[in-house]
Image 1 (cartoon, rainbow, N blue to C red):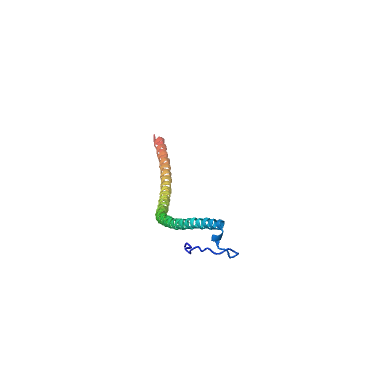
Image 2: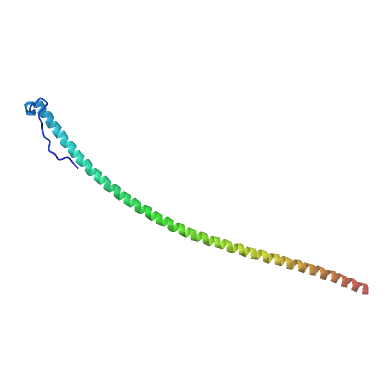
Length: 138
């Protein structure tokens, strides 16, 4: 990715050779040195970019694995909760049926109790009549 072309010196605008101008030689040397430093910096930055991309890809892979594991866990938890919810619904339904049967049994026992009370009242009346008859006979 780096530009490895050799740096060529060219003549100035007026056709003069840069060696004929000592200040120009120093300026070109400084520019060449600066360019070399920049090229090295560029190489270092490119290497850092490659490292950053590799690190990002690794982190992305790890994150994907964690997300996938979490999703599987949530899916299993959801399935388990759905099963538990269905079991609880069935239990509630069974308890409602049992409660309805108990209410029916209670109502039936109340009817039987009322009949027994009526029979007891009737027997009490008969007993009172018999007592009166016994008193009348005395």
